[in-house]
Length: 199
Image (cartoon, rainbow, N blue to C red; front, side, top):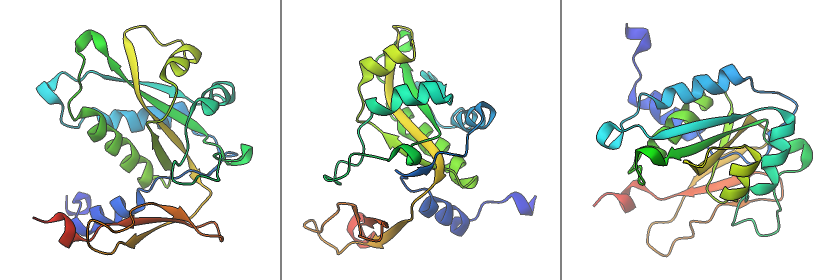
């Protein structure tokens, strides 16, 4: 059993590896079985009132992926970048939806389940980008979602075709928290120091 124990340091390394990826190796497909296995991880997260109202639509065919891509917003802080080039687009998507037949608010479930999915992907060296900026009505239409399913997030997935690094922010409320990309193509993500988030 000792081999299966997750240590604090191994969990920290996994969280550090779980970065938002926005450029992918589109030539490597992701199977529906792999995607379903990632969604299966979400079932084990905590759920407000244990209602478990989130549902997932897998998108992996080239045809459906091409219909979903133009409906997404990419990297709001990178004003001069319109999103991934055709050869750098995600290989698949997982669309998280709320089943409104079970309620109208999912409390904290959406974030918990998305973290489980992206951490699972990171163990397979698959990169993800959780996207909130997208055309919900259009996504519902192109995927023929039932009226009672309300899209919440789109997770873009694929093997990374970019380098993302974490760097320490300066302490204080006025520190620059915006991610940025350097001329060499490296994506930089500032993180607040522990001293800023401990009260």
